[in-house]
Image (cartoon, rainbow, N blue to C red; front, side, top):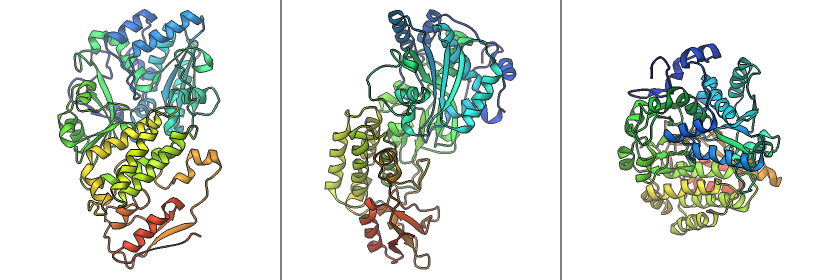
Length: 500
């Protein structure tokens, strides 16, 4: 806090939901009372501020905001166009809620940052892309309160899909086209919304910019590390949003949220990577600290893996979901990721060392070949899991398993879906309903849990160790594994029969 102008930055320990769990929706009057009037800076002053505080995009890539501003101004000098500003509020990452929290409770702070940038650049339009109905409603209420002064502000609700947040997909969706990556290597700073140079960054980035403009570089840097001043908003375990000063130990952040490193911590979300427990305990909330242990902050998600769940089964679940999220526009994504997910499931099901070798072959066939970053991010997740949980993957490949059920600790938006209903399958016109189903006979089931090891991603165990459902649709691609589970069930409690 600086003077009587509170900021996102907080001295001392972080707060759950950045204090937003104790705050009603902040209307414009309350927002101004708390934060003070919004300042105005010219583009040189704004660029200098962003550079002085080392502001980086908070959506994943961590690109320097000052460099984005310079790229847009350079394009404007060349083209003489009128630019646009785009706020990425899509947050398609299942384990991330921080941007949602800001837009639901403090939308005016985000709009302040976007309007500040728009006025500095001379933009006439600010566009927000979101995917949730409640977020869209919150933003529309805030826009209505601000009236017609300044640049026009609009919000567009887009499909809730992982790749919607990719820059070209977001811009295409707001422009009225399909919210899918274009596959073209053209920066939005050169040609973005409506074909004009566009400044695009995520929700938290603009909120941090609004705070920094009020406090100045010195006030903003009163919290956090000298090399990485300010705070970072984090989503922990997919359920808690925490605002933490940079430099805070990651174990302390986890402890605040009632959890611990467990078997490891997935940092940066599903395009990030796993930290083994010893690395997680040594790391702090800092890009440099995480880089030293081969981690990336990414979208600000910290997902600890409890000791009670199977890391192999969790990896298979997420890999299958990532394959579903393909835009269906290039082979490495539409074909390569499903093949990678299948190979991973085979290895988890006891198909031997050759299955693990097949996983690595599939990864090599996908990397650096996609039209967007989704294939590379997905293989990064799988490769990291194979490294950190190498012993568990080896045990599963040999058919021994690890003795733990797959509890679904890593959050996914829709457990019931199969790859047959993925965007890629719908594009190809092939989304048949499963013709068979796996049945659990409760009179025989003894809760051995072997079935969950053999069918990760399809069959989940509840906290009591028994299957959560008695009737489970079986996609054709998993039929052989389902039959294997039937054969291996010690209690003879499973059978496969025609659906319907």
